[in-house]
Length: 327
Ligand code: A3P
Image (cartoon, rainbow, N blue to C red; front, side):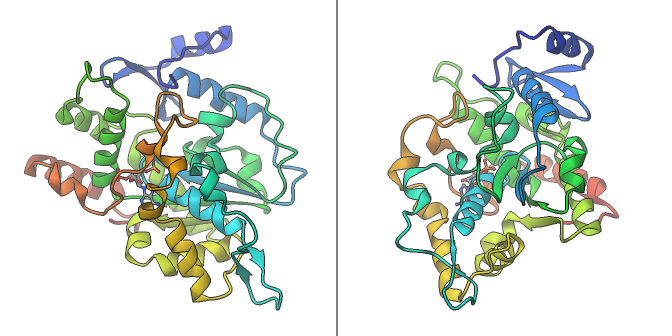
């Protein structure tokens, strides 16, 4: 699987031998590179992405970015749906063209927007992305610090980052990782998983470094990096979808169009579509349905002890102090 695979490349083997290593969920090897934890296969594809990704020659790229379990699937659905809208004949914004087939009926959101280091560069280190019509839409879980300078500096490339409160992110991650375990392995102890999360030891962790990297950039360059909170999307999806569509250069023509996008990308709809119910996702070892669970705010209250609540609250407070960001 994505998590277990090791590398055949001597350069990667040599690099790995020099990096700090940790065990995650009993058997998974993680390596600390440039401040974040990686599976060996994902580190290899990350390096391939950094060597070969080329954003010149296209008129625009949009990069969706996120920490795992913070709303990636939702953002992928929304962004690809919005990009599929067409300009209204009278020029007053974009509308859903009902003659064009709904892309979400036939594709899991992770197929519509591929994750660069977990899919695109994983099996093929030099994929040809030049044929993808512009504007291209990609996703990454990589931290802002390791994105390519060409992405950071290009005026034609924009980034949308989705964040979620750390408590729900952790619970979602715990369920997600459990969904990939065999019945013999059973449920992984939540206390141990929580300890790892608080220590920043999980795939693409630590949480707060990831969040703050994009948060700071969104403050410095709001036209370049849009920062969305999962909780705000849940509370006021109409407003957030409107903002997202404008940022993607596809302002929606009316509230009616906005409402259609909100409903068609909602978890209640997506989790019941045949395409998302059965089979395995592009992420090795993970089912398509595992990306849709309950999609609510505050599920952590059903799991946290008061010690867990206090510990993560304190970590959140100290990590975000002075940043202007809160949950
Ligand atoms: P829960 O486990 O709390 O239900 P990611 O997409 O980054 O992997 O995050 C997965 C989380 O987003 C899961 O949260 C999942 O249920 C939720 N999710 C998936 N699709 C969603 C949607 N369309 N709207 C809201 N939440 C969604």
